[in-house]
Length: 387
Ligand SMILES: Cc1cc2nc3c(=O)[nH]c(=O)nc-3n(C[C@H](O)[C@H](O)[C@H](O)COP(=O)(O)OP(=O)(O)OC[C@H]3O[C@@H](n4cnc5c(N)ncnc54)[C@H](O)[C@@H]3O)c2cc1C
Image (cartoon, rainbow, N blue to C red):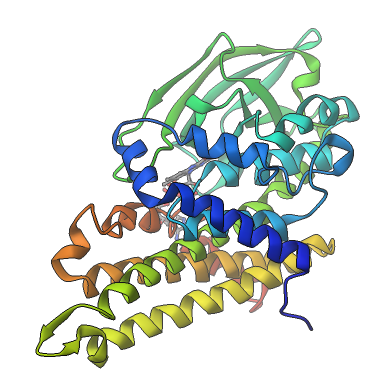
């Protein structure tokens, strides 16, 4: 058992931390409030190779795994820049294409993921289906060699910044007649694809959208993989990287909040010469949050290690647990930071309340805490499926 990063991973962590700190939370919030994107940070991270750490070297990437990408996600978040697009584009979309795309698709898309010049977002959630993906209603049907896709998706992040959206649809199996999932690479400017921005109570430079697909016509090679049989494994391929990197973002956000709060409570004095941090009523909640964040980080490390070792089933359990733990720890850390900063906690200047919406969303998306508890109850504890 080894809890140390390799020298290369430690170097990556330090370099990403330095980059994140050069931009910082003020930059992130200013962009968000202006309705702008963090393009400069994304582009610089791409040029430095941080967005492509998990892409195979033969396509221009760093040749690392989800461990490396989780380091990037955590360190940018720990610098106050939690970028959700890291989760949808390099973690989900790039993994799906690298593992289940055709060689032609890998050649076409992976170099762009490697240098960050290509952003691909991910659309599975639908208004009617919600957490129950078996009820997906977006359907792809053949029209000659082409595909025609129709349906609706909701809460899709980053569509306005992306060139493509990886859409999960259902297709009819020619032999059984049953609908089965398939993934399609859809250009965000495809005729028939329209979007409307959702107003979210999250301070973030990344936006969520409703997507409407009305007979969107796609060529045959928009289908990810060689055949319809690639659909289900391709969909599952994205889940572990998604859970692990979103957990890493949560852990980084928790670290950021605890650091801001600790700096404040170690110097703020309102009772004579004592700092407020000397009062256990202030220090213990912060210490408790720090313990929860560190525990989540351990589970993230385990999940990423299992995933990179190709142990997908075990990574599924650890990845879900990591996502649960990090989601709860991040929400606790930010809420505690706001509390110990008092009135300053609610100001924009001190940069913690600005994360309340994001960490609250982290307990719902991309998979809710309840659905993770369902998974653990069923697959770890052997309970009957409850839904
Ligand atoms: C900020 C943000 C970004 C997002 N980005 C994306 C994206 O890029 N792409 C994408 O596809 N989706 C995205 N989503 C959607 C997200 O994945 C869903 O919101 C999430 O999966 C929950 O689905 P729902 O909102 O339909 O909730 P519902 O399924 O309606 O559930 C509502 C509540 O009921 C609970 N619940 C439902 N079923 C059960 C059950 N069987 N047992 C116990 N509790 C249950 C849920 O846990 C939840 O608390 C995003 C959401 C947010 C908030």
